[in-house]
Image (cartoon, rainbow, N blue to C red; front, side):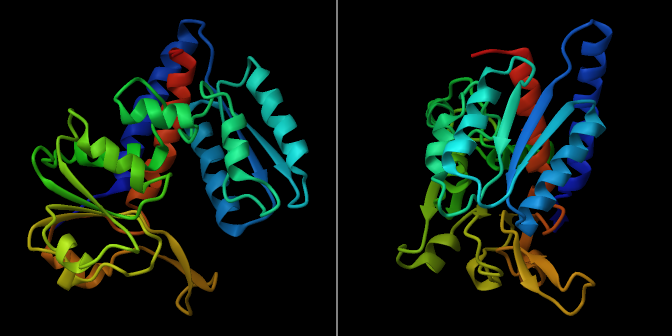
Length: 291
């Protein structure tokens, strides 16, 4: 069993991005500028955005954080999105999800200019990704593919099972694993809460991508010997072992599944760090290329 070290790969990719930014500065070109909108004080969102701001500093990007209280109106939020769309200094921006219930997430996502949508959530980017056109690929799926590529894990002709059908991870990663490319060229099955005989389907997989947000859902009896397991889950669960009173759990029961795997990602330190570097790569792309 080999552990897929997302943090180590993320550091390598950050180094590559930093080198590109350094060269841009030397050539008198624009430094990438990422903006983030954070609504409310959700603990997970606060942490994610803080990591993103820190990552920008590490690679030499400029960053702007715009904060709102949870009672901000949808109209006010959409107004700021419009301003960022028009701001020539901002290359890309994100609206950190989830948003308060009185705000339509879909309306906000669609209001973002798809050419600045570095999260890759806009329907135009999703559509372009699905048919293999240049686009901003959703950050978590892009990070997963980067890990498969860096570890030279074979995907051509492999049986890949994605557990979860979210618009942010499940659907786009399934689409990417089917593309005529590497990583890709896999035979993909998407399982979800309505899948019958789920255990039987998953146990046939060469590559399992668990992205359903249910802690320790994937157990050893669902995994065949030698499978590659990518754990996308990050659920906060109460814990007496930590000072914070909680710990992150993945969708995979790691201790019992890991011995059966050829490769497996841990939580934390697997897919998570790659999500942030994928966001940085998209921002750099937004600065360099317009499509």
